[in-house]
Image (cartoon, rainbow, N blue to C red):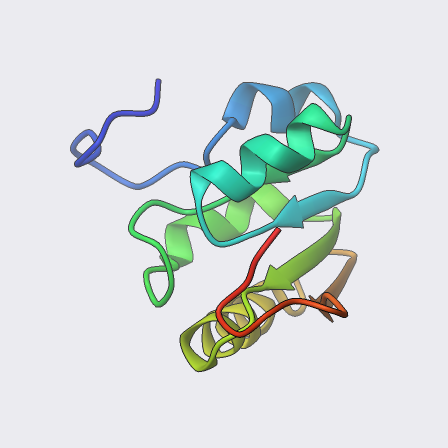
Length: 111
């Protein structure tokens, strides 16, 4: 369950059941629930961390071990820094990690 403010203990990725049910599918990590929901509506496996940009927690890394992960950066400096931080954390854990800057986004734009 996804609760604002979060439960006590280690954080979990948004949409964890969907993430676990599609072990072979690539995962898209974006900045925020709205973005993840948009991608999920298109049939993709997408998630995010609680708290937005700059709040990736090392405890989340385990959920992406062995997965192909695409990190979608929001088109602003905090978004790019967050995407790079997530990719850094998943390096050596995920099978493949790539940061994607979506073309044509307006300043501060996202999925």
